[in-house]
Structures are given as structure tokens and as C-alpha cells.
Image (tube, rainbow, N blue to C red; front, top):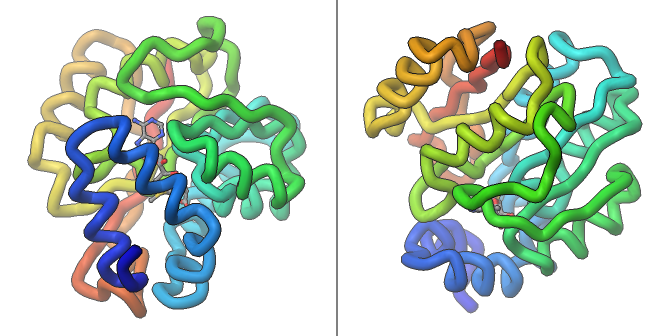
Length: 208
Ligand SMILES: C[S@@+](CC[C@H](N)C(=O)[O-])C[C@H]1O[C@@H](n2cnc3c(N)ncnc32)[C@H](O)[C@@H]1O
């Protein structure tokens, strides 16, 4: 496998879900070292902070694209005790299990129908998952379905991708009374040491 800088580009370049899953399975053991230690990846902190200000700690949370569990760790530190991890990569879920902050693990694929009940969760958090070669935009339909009315969907998104169909999709869901915008943060650098030119925002929508 390549070095840490190329590994990020390598997963972005996945052309099928199978390739994406295999690449994350291979990266799983070194992901925290690469992203957290080397790149100073801070999107999980920023997203968890937004969610914690909107939802009480007793809430049932789905971490969609949980990866190795960095967002779950931040939520647990903020007092959350009911957090389910879902990811396409079993290798990433195995790493997440070692964090001891999740009470359920699900290997599922965003973009497909999710094996959860309608309104099963009070909130969804999804960090670093809506990006090149990862979850498709229409994954939001299922995230809306599995979130209780009044609950929240909180996610990070690159600022330069908002106009690539995301804003239109957000507007479509809003026009259909599926959700409304609750909050969007100022842009920040999610990988200040690795890719300082990249900016993200954390978006929060309330499901109606
Ligand atoms: C950049 S990592 C982010 C992981 C974690 N949320 C974090 O902030 O560190 C993206 C994660 O999304 C998962 N993922 C990508 N596409 C997915 C999909 N369609 N369905 C489920 N998980 C997906 C990957 O396996 C990977 O664990």
C-alpha cells in the first residue's frame, strides 16, 4: 500500500463499492495514525460538537460511515451512550469496536436500503463520508427515513462539493418537507497538516 498522503487519494479513486470496501479494509489498521496523528483530522470533533448542541446525551445516534470510530469517541466523551456504528468496511468496524464507545455494529452500504426501522434513531452523524467515490448523494433519503421526525442529520462536506449536486438535493428534500436546515458552520480546515487547501463545513438538518 502507498504512503499516508497517497492513501487518501487512493480511497477517493475507488470506482465500485467493492473496491472502496477493500481499500478501507486494507487501510483500517493505519487510518488513525494517518488521519488523526499525521493530518490532524478534526472533522469528527467539529461534527460531534454540532450534534451535542442539538441533541441530548440520552439520544439514540447512528454513526453512518463510522470508520474507526473517531466521531463516536468524541460523542462518548460528550456523554452519549447509545451510538450505533455502520460502515461498508468490516475492517473499519473492527477498529471501531476497539474504541469501546459503540453498542451496535452494522456492515451496510449507504446508497442502498438500510436495515433499520423508520424513525429508529434520534440523530445521524456522518463525517467524511459524502465525498469523492464514497456515499452517493441519494443516501440522504435513507438517513432521513431512519431518523425520527424532529431529529437531526449532521454531516461534514467539502465546501467545493456543495455545488456538485448537494445544494440541489438539499433544496429538493426541503421542498418536499422532508427536512429543514438547522445549522451550517463556517468553513474550516479538516486536515490542517495533510491537505491544508481542503475546507469542510458541518451541516445539520432537522428531519420533519
Ligand atoms: C474518510 S472515512 C471517515 C470515517 C469516520 N467517520 C471519521 O470521521 O474518521 C469514510 C468512511 O466511510 C465509509 N464509507 C464510504 N462509503 C460508504 C458507503 N457507501 N456506505 C457505508 N460506508 C461508507 C468508509 O468505509 C470509511 O470508513
